[in-house]
Length: 177
Image (cartoon, rainbow, N blue to C red; front, top):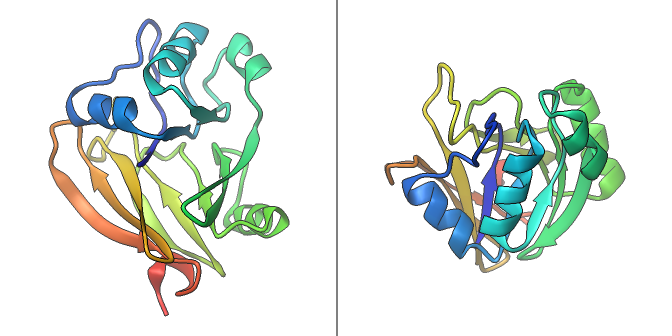
């Protein structure tokens, strides 16, 4: 399983509870789309996640931004991802970043809103925020290999399933045909 989180906004701990903590611990890899806030929180994610693919966000301290790139590319289950925080990106810039990376999906944070939708010819995935949801529901995303793509779901820390979805490069953006 690939677990996708963002916008922790912690100072002392990773603010992982319930299903989110389990999903991070059980994942083959974890993607974090920025805004850990402090190095202490980044280090806690490294300890909890095992394999962590993270980028810096606009609220991260200099210690965090010095250790993390602003953009990262990875593959999981036959899907190529580009990860950015998203605070400096228009939709056009996100689409361009995906095309430049040859990515099927662009992962962003920043808005704290769990979202999966088509963005031009790629899929945009925002896992929301598990710890600082603001006006949205707290959430993270879980992705598992399934045929030619990934079966995904948005899940709240209390285990409530918010939405199921697919990311299937052969079917087009956001699993649409």
